[in-house]
Structure formats: structure tokens, C-alpha cells
Image (tube, rainbow over all chains, first blue to last red; front, side, top):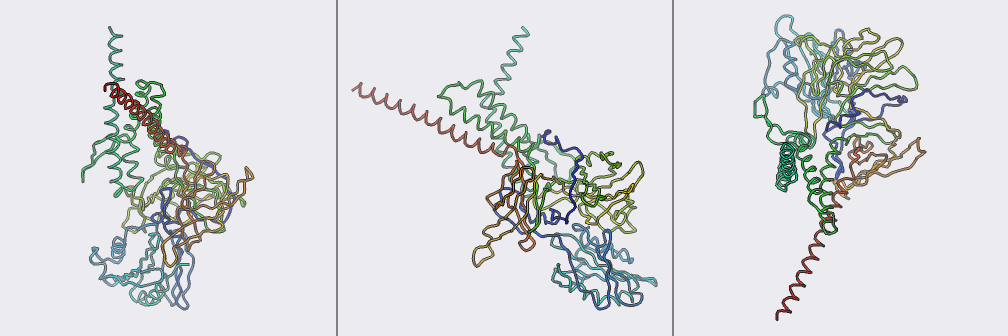
Length: 185
Length: 396
């Protein structure tokens, strides 16, 4: 067993011609691939997920950078941006994210049992999207409109905007329409 | 006197080591381990169960909720090792080198080879995966459970220089110099498995100071072993170039965003990814076929039509890799493993195991040994019957 480590503990170097990015195992759902040879059956796997959607009229979108996949800019003066972020895996899970959003508008945490009563489910071609709409209290109240969609590889996609209650209300119908058009490229 | 005592102890030890009782105890232990390992696959997955029961020195048990654990069984490594020793020494010591005993010789050699084959596999087998789409070529494989920190010099327009720091070095921590570059990497933290989420004001300040890391909160999780689960490792890497800090980067298998830095006119990308091994040849997926039984969705056959090009040996041929017809080439075996993307993407399981023939040789030897041994026994029995019959005739 000790020998198995031999030859593995050094920095490797390879000079690789530049080429179009190849498919690699990160694009594959590890649960879908059979890994024990010889295979007696092959299971379908998912390639890299690249969702797309249709923007409401006059809305704009810019490509994101870093961990942000895209930024959607609704039409209208003072309309808050909607961020689209993808994180690998469950990213804490739905409950943890809901409580994080609630915390950001000054609301207390809830438990799993409360989630169905708090969310609206939007059905899209890419699967169900869970939408949460929380309003804080007080004169400086912030409203949080956030949606979570889990792709076929188990990664978490977040659509989120927060601003004053009226500003969020103005973009809400457009965001729900956008989520209904969510699909895979 | 001392010489006699040493001789006595030596003989006693040799007797114990070569005893049939020890062989039976070891074979029983092996059966217990195989049973426990099989049952454990429900919770641990195949890989996790084999690592815990068969490729370990001791099998540990931890009571529910306890922070301590105790060894409850010897692992497959000492049991297999002792069994090899027992069978080998017993054979040399006891068995006569005669034709009559040739069956038993073959049987013992076969059993020793069977156990030794598992040691060779445990030490030297490498499992990897090759994923490509129709019309695309691939010249590297990715290990299925090992990661590496990739630092890629992307400055040149024609090629990238890729430096791979294996997971074992990241786990060891400390500073890692990248040869032939001005880069020095200090491992601030390495997590075999983790969960990422957006960082909020309530989270403690991120240790990452560059790239996308400051926006992300990372939480360490225990590694997973189930076959259908995969770790999401993360690391915090303090990058220095010619002694100048370029910041602390959070790299993770869960981050798809590209991160990098520049130094002295050169541009670098930094990423945590499955460990790559480049091949001296390339495979191009010409066509992937997915056949089903007529009128159903039940899979019948999967196959990849692949063009193999090896510039070093001028080899250029087309190969069909299907479910039970792998491609064996230069020490690696490519099995059709999976597929995706509307049947335009194929996944090959790539196994490198120098001892892959040993179980076949072993089974052949054991079969031959049994045939030879029972043939001699049958002959003896036959002769005894003939003699008994002759004696009976003589008595009448």
C-alpha cells in the first residue's frame, strides 16, 4: 500500500496545445456514470448545464464574471438588478438559503416544515423553480425576491434581487415570466 | 544451549507460520472480511468498503456518537500477506517436488498468485475516465477520485504550460515551489469535501483575498464514499511570485469561474480539478451508438467508434469500443462506461492495472491443479480397486 503512493507526490508539467475546451468529467454527473469495469450497462449522464431564458421586453442582460453567471437589468427607472449565480452542489440546501435571505431582511429563521407555505413553484422546461418573496419590517424595509433551481448535475442556481418593496414589486411579474421560460441550451 | 533454544524457537515459529490451522483461520477471516465488505457497500459504496475492509491493516469500529474507535478485525492487507507467506513457506517446506504432488503445487501457486494479484491491484491500479463528444478528440484522462491544483501559464498563443500539484501535496500543506516558474504556493487550508454558498455579512471574514473567494463562504464536510457521490474539495492557496504576494485564492471543484493572476508579463490561471494524465496518443470519437430493444427504451448496446492516433508509432486506426469489448492499448484498458448529451457524448472508463492478468493466470492454475491432483487420486483409487479385486479372486 505504501508503494501505491510512489510516483504520485510530485508536481507534474505538461505543455498542451491551445484548443477548444474539451468535455471533461466535471461535466458529468458522477452519480450517472458507472465506474466499475467491466461495465454491464451504461447509464446516461448529464453534460455541462448551460441554462437560458427569454428576457421580458426591454430587459437587458450582461454576462457575469467570477461566480456570477449573469446580471439581468429590468426595464424602468430605479429597477433593481437581478443576479444569477451558480454554486456547485447543494450550496447549503434550500432551508439554509431561505433562512439566509430572511436574515438579510430582518426576519427570523424557519424550519423545513414551513418552506412549502412560503414558496411559489414556477414550472419551467428545465424543471421546477422555487420562488421566495420576503419583506422586512420598519420604515427602511427591504424586500427580497429570490429563486432557487437545482440543475441535473445537482448544482444550485440562484436568481435574486432585493430593494425597496415597491421596486421589487415592479420587477416581480417580469422575473416570474423569465423563470417560466427557463430551459437548457 | 543458546543455539539450541534459538533453533527450538525458530522451528516453533516456522511450524506456526506453516500450520494448516493458521491457513484455515486466515481463510475464515478472509471470508468474514469479504462478507462484511459486501454488506458495507450499501452504506459506503464499493470503493469505500474495499478501502475500509480489504485495503487496510486494521478494521476500525466507532460506536454511534463516539469520538473514538477501536480495531475489531485485521484488515485485508495483513490477512492476505500472512496467507501468501503461509501458503508459500508451507509448500516449500512440506510438499515434495514430485509428479504426484504437481497438482498441489499448481493449486498453491495459483492461490498465492490470486492474493498477490489483489496486492498488485491495490498498489498499482489507477482508475480514470475519458470524456469526449462526437467529432472531438481527447489526449488526457481524469482520475475518478483524485484532484489536483492546476496552475496554467496561458501566456503563449499556441500552447499552455500546465502544472499539476497532486492532492497528496495539498493535504501535506506547507509551501510548494513550482519548478521553472517564479511561483511559490502556500497551502493555507485544504478540505477533501466542502460546501459553498454565497457569503453574507454574518459570515466570518473570508480568508480569500483574490479572485471570487471573498464572495464565497466555504464549510468543510466529511468525505463521501458512496459510488453515486463525489467530494467537492476546496483549498485556500496563498500565491507568491518572486516573493510578491498575489493574494489568497479560494479554489474548489464547486467553482466554475476562471480565476488567475499576472506576473512579469505572464498570465496564469489557477483551478482545482480532477487530476489529469496526458497520453502520448489521442482518441477521437467518430460516432456513438446507443441501441435499444425494438419497441422499448430498454438499452441493448452502447458503443463508441473511436479513431486512435499515436504520432510516436505512426499508428492510426479505427476501433469499436463496446460494452464488453474494451480497447487495450499501451497498458491501459478503455471500457465503454457511460454516455450523455443526447447520445453525442461518450464516457470511457480507463483502467491501468499491471496485474490485470494475475487473476486469470491464478484461476487457470487452480483449475489445472485440481484436475491434475484428482486425476492422480483417481488413478490411485483405480489401482487400489484392481488390487483389491485381484486379491479377492486369489482368495476364492
